Length: 119
Image (cartoon, rainbow, N blue to C red; front, side, top):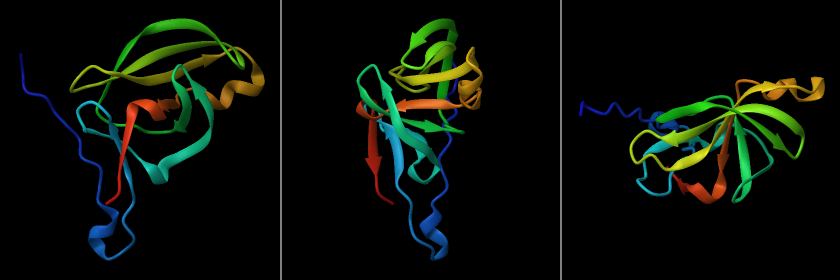
């Protein structure tokens, strides 16, 4: 087994500005996304509320899978914590409805799988 590369999110408060919260994997506490980067809080996942992001870190991707979600058919990939392999959410690969195309390439992180650390 090789070395594991873990990306740490920048500490915005270090330069004198306000510190932003970081969402981390609930199981192993590795950084996943900045709370400031949430695009929408109006999503639902398998375990309840979920957040939409453009960018997340320290994840690995599962295979493509077609799923019928609340907004129709989508091709998605599950995303896993790169440290502990806990499922954290999914990435939208393809949306079949024109009104849902904005989700393509974006990530869903499930609130129940996240731990929020204020910095």
